[in-house]
Every structure is written in structure tokens, then in C-alpha cells.
Length: 107
Image (cartoon, rainbow, N blue to C red):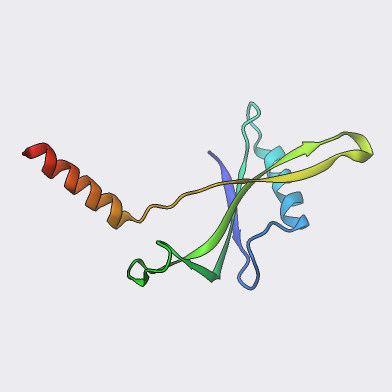
């Protein structure tokens, strides 16, 4: 999977019209067999708690991942960003679950 990322340090992670145009340009440059090129926008100053409200896991920056798709043709052609949903699982949870799974296997 190929892609690019950049930050929106002072505003939300919604793709701007310039982000959409840039992304389509990158998509065309790196297009192989119709594979999508992925964009990731990160906003480090707009953070969200990783597990709802618990501060022990810290905070993550807000982010948005998207691809662009062309709709219409000629003068009616528009580039439309489609969000790709990403779920982040804290490493502590993964390690704890793996540890518990292995302990149960040893019994």
C-alpha cells in the first residue's frame, strides 16, 4: 500500500480541496493496476483519548485516512474523497490479551 501524509496542525483533519487535488495528482503518478493511493491527515493539537476517557493510555492525535474517486465526466467530473476507517488498538491491550491467551493455553 502506498500513500502520503501531512499535518493540519491548527485545524481539523478534514481534507481541503487542495488536499483532494494533490491526492489525485499523487494517485495518477503512482497508479499501478488501479490500486488506490492512500492519504493520511494528522492533527497533532486536536487529540482524542485512545480508550474513551481513561488518561492512562495517553492521547492520540486526530487523523483521517482517505482515497479519491472521480465521479462524472467532462465538465461534470468531480473528485470525491472517501474516508477509510482505521481502528487503533493500544499495544498494551494486545500484549495483555496475548499474554492471557498464552497462559490459558499452558494450563
